[in-house]
Length: 466
Ligand code: BGP
Image (cartoon, rainbow, N blue to C red; front, side):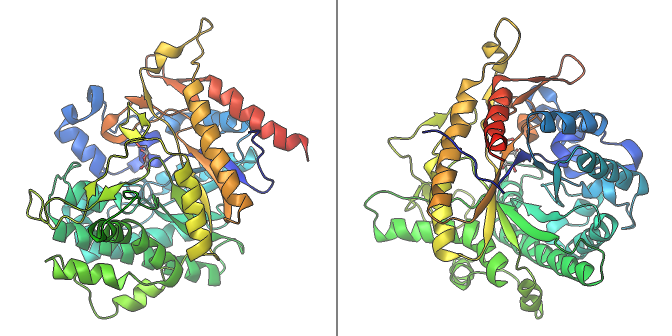
């Protein structure tokens, strides 16, 4: 199939502050939770590469923005680091703000749209020490941070997002405990998820207040980014399989979709949780806050489908209710380096679900990508990485995006994750995602891979029609 990108469709790059900037102690930047983890247990990170360096975007932002433009991308998303923008007294750190002003000005100069996200798993350490997302004062502090950002950058940035994948910290830090601080407590995890929902809603409220007061561009928009992939189960499911589907979808997707579309949380999910000993503590007045959580659009991060079936045991090894077991689809194709299934049709299924259930809300594919280990194996004689597997991956996913648009999905863009190789949390630089290589042995030098030429040619085709 010949791939043809529609007009008025963002083609861009996704990245985040904590995974690219580095400069972890420069210009008044405070410690964040990744720095704390890196300092306390560096062996938890692949090749002992902690959070300190990113891919040196702090120094190389101009070169990087020019590179994105050189392969004809029209937009990119990154995130501000709370620990860089604000000081411990919840005041703006002018030097930190200066960096983001430079990035915004540079994007403008080179004609590339900047999408700005406010939080990408990067709690400032001093706030984590006060209880992090378990503490409502931290929720309030996040609203102050969001207000400050909107007012400081309101005339420079049009597209804003409150959170990237707000489901990840409750899961990784508090429920499964695989990320620092390694807590395995379903109740605390749900409370964190709930508090993040309040924080999102307070930030959206601040956004509209700032808009009313003239601090923002008149067409500024606010959204939330999540991995919303609809879960699948076996082809001939039992009622128990369907129940596993309901709760998986409820906690991971409907929770956020309902919040962004109707300013509420799914009652059936809250009730099931309470009946299983995981009640969420809701205070009077919270419903009013959540009502403010409705957004202008969504970002959909998609890497792999979720497949579930009825759980063998109703309780897991930590004594928590177990709502589902993983289901291994016999026909699955894997990205063996990351351990994630590759299933491009999932992107289409989400588009159709949005069309059916939330027809008014537009969205874009905010992350999609393929991380591969030891990519130097694929270098040709001229030294260029021949990442045909990545080209195939992107091509297949984009084909399903196009099909969903043809059939009525309101998908308005595609951002590839990690256009420039970056730091992948505790996998550090193990799996490389980029169309552009970062040479860690050579001062973070950037080099195009084969996929960079491919994506450039794809976008040029569209431009020829203008
Ligand atoms: C998403 C995150 C990104 C990014 C990506 C790839 O869930 O939003 O921050 O890291 O996954 O995952 P990883 O880097 O773990 O391979």
